[in-house]
Image (cartoon, rainbow, N blue to C red; front, side, top):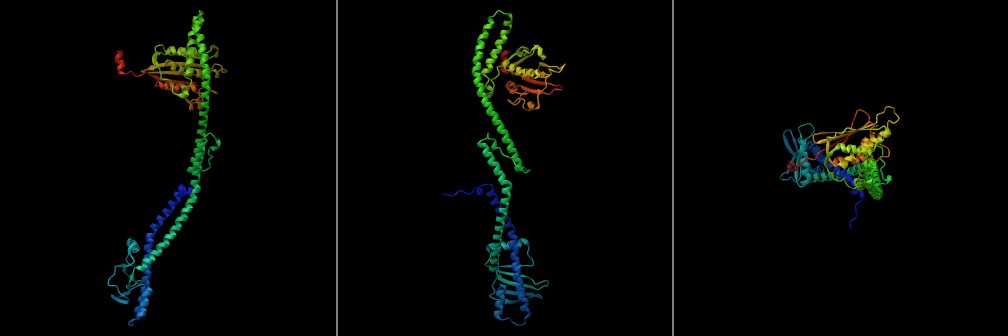
Length: 480
């Protein structure tokens, strides 16, 4: 069974360590190529200088002839097979031993380019060692040239030894540099990133635990900024999860209340049906409105959980007179004459709207009821304060625009930012914000829009736009 690699080898730290070693070694290789070429030239130049010194001494002893043992010692000391001196236009073979019939390569140390030197060095390392080469160059600044013939084997051995030394030094430098880079980056990057990862894992296990929220550290680098954003995101997510839990608990409580409320309303509906038989004129005038109100209440209790479980029912659209609906909204609001709140209905009797009457009633009633609640606590102690709700409508082409305007205190900034968000967009303390959220959902189901309109004076102005349904060509031809 193969043992698992340590965590630091498999992680980002290990990858960074090995990459640093590889990159430093690559840089050393790029440096090594010209370096070994220079080493080769220096080695050849040193041998040539040694041969030149021996050649000058031997030339000064002329016309005496050196003994064979002295010649052999000279060749061994210089590492050559022959030494030639070119002087005053003549060439003289000073020392020779087993002169080869031909030379494999020749090198002029006085005229060599960098690229040529690199190519010769690489060739010597890769394929050299068995060649006989001729190397020559000037002695000092005069015209005397010394030439030597030698085997390339000693040169290649020296180059291989040099390459091994460079490789060992490069490897030590690479490991040391990689270790320093690892320690530095591990402290500056890897540890903070691991801390972020551990925080995300711990928060995912128990997101409701406040202790699992990351505590960001000070700093202006990218990781510190990411840590602060992660901490804020975790806090916001925890609040959202808490709200969702509260909504779930609220839904359970509402479902229990709804069950009993439906039974109570059903009993009230049965008893209110008997009011129709009462002969009292006042009862006869109020009975139909009471019956419609109880019917709506029964319908609301049936669909009270629809907001949290599914979307609203599809609108059952028909064309009807909007003035009748606005009058019904006014009657249901039942604004007390002593409250000082004035309700002005400017909806013309000629305006028809293509909509679901029950759903549009809920939209207008919710907004008007919010306006009444806002005006009830505003301006009562200010003499001459105007507290008015104005409901108006107009048709432009196939769109009916409904405006609900009040002269109340207006909406707070927080309520504007979360205008149509349930449980966050309430304009009054203790409100839920469900009314506007439901109103927006119903309007969007009609293909319309609802928006808060800016106005120069105090108060709140909502504008609702309901377009007519498009008529198919077949339906139009059938009616025509």
